[in-house]
Amino acid sequence: MLDKLGGNFAPKPSTGPHKLRECLPLSIFLRNRLKYALNYNECTRILAQKFVKVDGKVRTNKKYPAGFMDVISIEKTNEHFRLVYDTKGRFAIHRIHPEEAKYKLCKVRKVLTAVGAIPFLVTHDGRTIRYPDPNIKPNDTIQVDIATGKVLNHIKFEPGIA
Image (cartoon, one colour):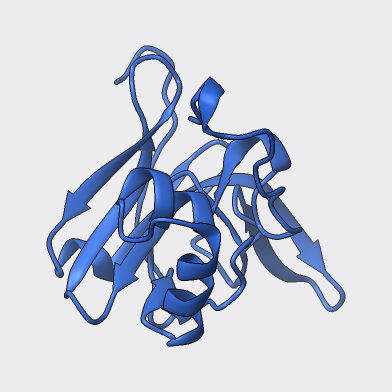
């Protein structure tokens, strides 16, 4: 992710929806991956202009943790990216179409019931969705609409299925 001779320090991601070891700060994304900024101050200025959206929400925190399957949109250039892993387990930036940027795939971590017997589920990125389909179980994959937060579709977890 960072080269050896580029300097001693890298920004530590702030707390957010993804684990510390499973995320990429927005400043690293803009500076090292997209090459839109030459230094940290330019990243700050780009984010302060509110052009960068992560999962449909404007993010101005330069240390905001972007993680697996997050949709990062840059309004000024009308570009959309999805963070995925490559074959070696590193973050790869996948350029996507605007139609693909409207949804996100999430892994279901838990399915629980709240007070008053209200069912809800928790996803890998910390989302809580109330009243899900009763057929959704832990480890399933759901397709979430970014604008509304509703479940569009779900895929059952089956061992051996790619």
